[in-house]
Length: 287
Ligand code: AG3
Image (cartoon, rainbow, N blue to C red; front, side, top):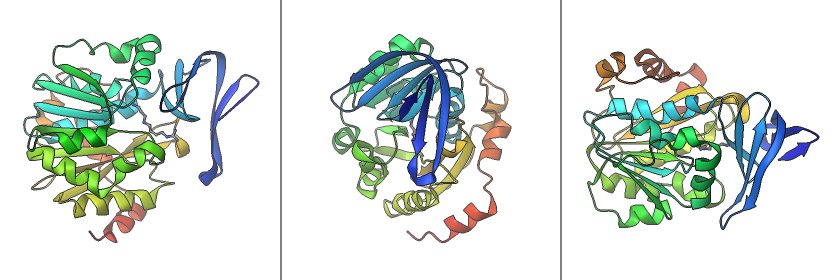
């Protein structure tokens, strides 16, 4: 939260820890209708976006998060054609989604248009698919959008949100997951960023329970490094509407239809292997 001389640090109070980056300059700062957005130029991580004091992404390491938010879900679906991204205003997840040739329509529902406009300016590489004819950018509340979306109209839903406090809190709750379940077509999948497997075990368990109670038949967590977020280690939770989660198109992932830097068919499978303490914690979840 603080800029001390030429460092930006996010102090993560509940974990009693901080992550800092040496900065060259503050490039932008504004209070949008929803939040405080800051952009920095760092010495070693390229541009950095911060929202309400929390690191959102850097140019150097966002590929870890964006590839793992998009590809495990998309390669676990038999034929993903219609994708919805909730949040994700920096457009990095959208870009990864549109690498899949079979995707016919990808809607990004971001509440704060300023995040996207600033990303176009400071993270242009993430926005390179924004003008793809298959992309639709909407600036509205994701929870309301889902409440009104037609049933069985999406194959994959990706929840690329901020932490579960303030406006994003409702995106981690059973009523929202019920709406997503209704909007998903048979075989549909939801994937949600689910915070740190070190710091947020309780949240991971509550996301599992809420997804199950909302009617999802199988729920699995995957993990990957994310140096710039609290603890440096992050997760996403995947759930399917019916049946069980399987890497349906892992063979096409193995043929590497498009270039990736972190994701691969092997990384996909490895990411679902959990350490014993998480296996144990998640086994206690009833739902
Ligand atoms: N999504 C934000 C994850 C939460 C980070 N939390 C934190 N720094 N305390 C990032 C959006 C990338 N598309």
